[in-house]
Image (cartoon, rainbow, N blue to C red; front, side):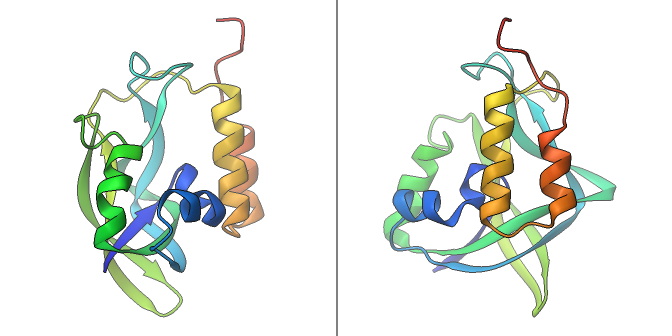
Amino acid sequence: MTSYAAYGTNLDPARMGERCPHSPLRTTGWLTGWRLTFGGEEHGWDGALATIVQDPFEQVFVAVYDVSPLDERALDQWESADSGLYRRTKVRISTMVGEIVAWTYVLDAFEGGLPSASYLGVLADAAESADAPDDYVNALRIRPCRSTGL
């Protein structure tokens, strides 16, 4: 088993359970020194895609999963790492029981662009499902987004 830190739609344990049924939720925590942002608008079906970038003043809420070898390949496909859109990177997660080294996905595209309102809603719902703090979920819900008419 290897540790994977989810910051996007995979924050939702139910969604992750469907995608990777052999990979249980281990804990939640914070990826300090990084911020959630969006990019690769030309690759998204209705707006920019979630990613993280280093930022010494920010932090990102994450869910840490113990990913089985059976599920690693499936997760790479779900996250488009097998196509090169996202790449893996190792990060250090701060949890209530100490620090955990995990891998996560980073978009291999330029930062910028707006996500769709529906995508932001899915991200906020996923964070809420993972018991993210209310202020974190609310900040996702009020982020600038692309209106549906564009």
